[in-house]
Length: 490
Image (cartoon, rainbow, N blue to C red; front, side, top):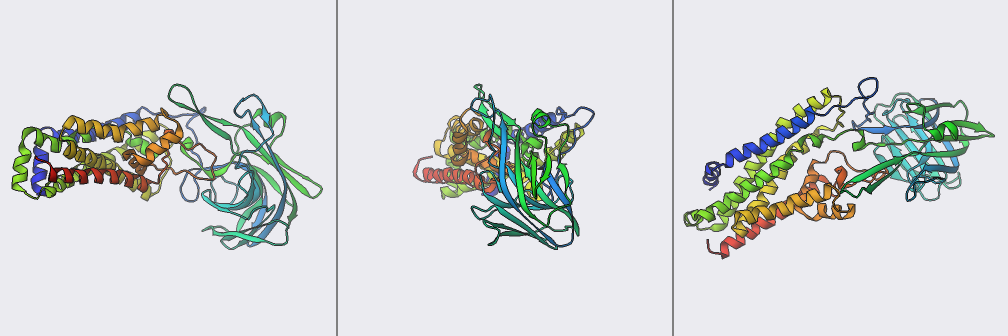
């Protein structure tokens, strides 16, 4: 039956040409976009953003009072106060306010030098999320409430963070292992304050993301052991903002046994602001989606239109086997189509983008493989859904229209800011468009102050969970097709 249905597909007028067109559209769109993309900075090529120990792009900019630590050691301090400013925040955008962004942070750190992106472990106090222990940019663990005393302890490659409310009774937050940590590292106190980032509708169906400068100042006392500090603005470039020049420059001040540190920046995984993500190279897949929907719907409705379905069902009286065999052939054909398109597009597009000075956020082998396979799965599940609708409706135009309405339209509404962010997230949770999450390469992180939204390419469901939603829809329509063909006359 599978062989017979494959023969029907490849002899269906235009079906093989259409699948080749789907591949061509994906490849052409990806290569033309990549070839036309050029990035440069004053003085030459733009510097690449720092990359963390796990290979992800990171933000690593903060004020650091540090000294060398040779071998094992411990640092303890109390954060006596923490204040900050936000420049021109909404809703009025007309003044500088004495507030802190939620993820402004101050605490203790052990770091492999001061190079941005180098391994580190820290225990810290935040403006709105309590005490945390963070390491290597993505690791984040909550500490006990009400703590102001912080302690970091190093034994070999293991760093342990503690917190206390009184400096006497200590609670262990977490112990992390920094593989390859050298014997001599830098240990000290730090302050960071991320930008105040908001996203607002611009009234034309788009969004405007704004980032405003912020600064935090923390006072440490009871620092032990103390002394011998050197100040560095890790990751800082340029002369800074007007606020820093004329009001409060970043830096360190020692007075009466206390240490005051001011600074801005963040220590966290970076997002799409660091550069286009890998999945952008296969954006042409969206055009290919229309082609495979047409092919899938016509695969069954053409037999109804020509009356050939009666011959098929006479040859195979068990009607459900016919539906399932056709579904299997359609799934396989469109999966291979998407797979070939991705394999042809990705490597060449990446080379063109890099030649044009554009930085593409690196991903691990597993993520890259998921995106390649995901291209095939997105196309094949959309095709399966359109095919199932064709079995149920028996009309090609109606099946195509319904498939586009369920798969394409929700994705367009959600990713072009036509609907509010929360409505967009719901569309990408409950409609078949959820499956596009399989192509997302840069995840959202709870410890990053950024308005992760579908318009920026962030999906509310995890990659495989989103694809699972699409698979449920496709399976449901094929199952309805089985019921329809069993009960209905051909």
